Image (cartoon, rainbow, N blue to C red; front, side):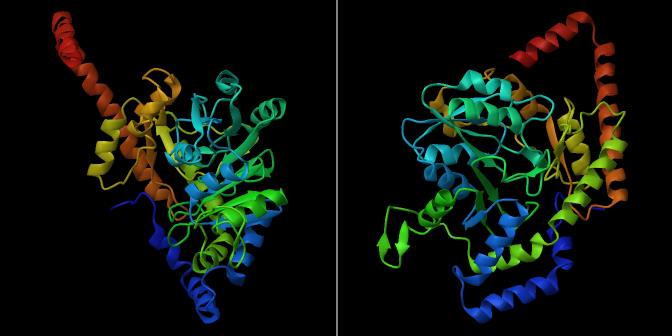
Length: 393
C-alpha cells in the first residue's frame, strides 16, 4: 500500500462542490484580477490572523521580498535569519540588495536561536526574519525584545505555519509583517502559486498594494517602480473556501503527530519538540536520526514517500558562497541537515497508516544498529582502523 508524502487528491474530494461554486462565481463576474473575490479573502485572512490588514501577492517569496522593500531595506543593510529553511528566505533578502546574516538554530525546535541573534548584530542590521519552521513558531518573545532594544524590524516567515500560535497569538500577528505562502502543499494551499502579507500598519499595507502592482496609485500613475505580483481572483476564491477548514485540518495534523510520537516513543528517534506556549500545526513531521539513510531506504522499499528538509543548509549553498560561510560555522544547523527526515503528514492521514510507517522506522533503526554491531564485532581493531582510513580517503 503506497502512502504519499501529502495527499492533495483526498483533500480535494472533500471540497469539490464548494470549490466549483467559488470558481463559477469568479468566472461569472469576469473579475480575474482584483475584484471582490480577492478583497473578501483578504478580509477573512486578516481576521483569521488577528491583524487589521492582509494583502495577497503572487507567491511566498514575493511576500518576503515586498515586505522587506516596504520597510525600506536595501543595499548596505543586513538582515538576520536562519540557514535551516528553504532558500526563498535568503533569496528575498538578496533581492533587495541587503545581506543575509545567518545564525544557528535551537537544537530542540530547529527554529532560530534568539541567543545567537545578538552575536550577529552589527551597525548595519535592519531586521530579523525568524522562520516559523515546519509549523512551529519561532521563539518570538526574546526575538521581539531584541528588536525593540535595537530598533529593528521583525518580518515573520510564516510560509509553513498557517494558524500556528505563540502564547495565544497567531503567526502573522507577531512581528511588523507576516509573510505567507499558499503553495499547494501548504496547510492552506492554493491550486497554484500564491502568497500574502499581514500587518497592523496601514502604511505598510498601502505600500504593499503599490509594490505588488507596478507602483500604481491610479490607473496610469505610478509613485515608484514596483512589481507584477498579484494574487489572482481564482486563487483567492479557492483559498477562501479552504480557509474555513484550516483549523480542522490543523487539528487533524496534530492528532497524526500525537500518533507518531506514541509509536516512536522508545525507538531512539528524536521526534518534534513543541515549545511551551506554542501551538504546532505540523506542516511537516520531521524526525532526527543518524540512521536516516537506512530508514529512508526501507520506507521507500515499502512504498512510503519521505522528504528531507533541508539537506544543504543555506550558508553552504553554492548560490550563497559569496557570503563567506564555511562548514562548521553553524553546527546545530549542519547536524539537522545531516539527520532530519520528514515523514508523511496531512489531515487525511489514518491511524493505521501512521502505525505502519512507525513500524518500518523502528525496524529499520534496529536493523541498522544490529548491522553496525555485527561489523564491529567481525573486524579486528587493525581492520577497523584500516576501514576508517579508507573511508576518509
